[in-house]
Length: 178
Image (cartoon, rainbow, N blue to C red):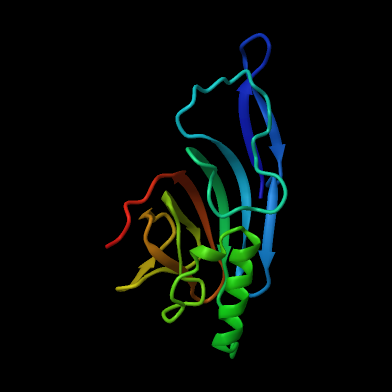
């Protein structure tokens, strides 16, 4: 995976300021991984001359900072054949805890990675065959299809091999559910 980030040089000409791998990676065998690309303020002024690499460093965190936006790739893998549900549930809980999101794990009855985010997400399946799993059912996706995920409880399932997604996460307050 390669990130190419643009900006302006001192003369005001557009240039590449970052050309390299993801800024942070978290991979879990049998589950998939997160690959951080960029994080920024969602509504602050944009200064192309500011040449800092804003790709998140260190251990990936599930959600963007308050008022922020985060761009990432993520891979979902089919569970290993015959993996016990209890082991998948525990592995998913541990992965979310590593991302500072243990409290986001929801009822794992439908899927081991069922979770809720406090973000508005734009998610595109780039490669593979996958499903969006919600409390009410499941929707199959093909490459090039986009999901607007609006703070709901959800999970992703890959079919027949890994599924690669690109996601833009925008921090948004969530109206409490009644």
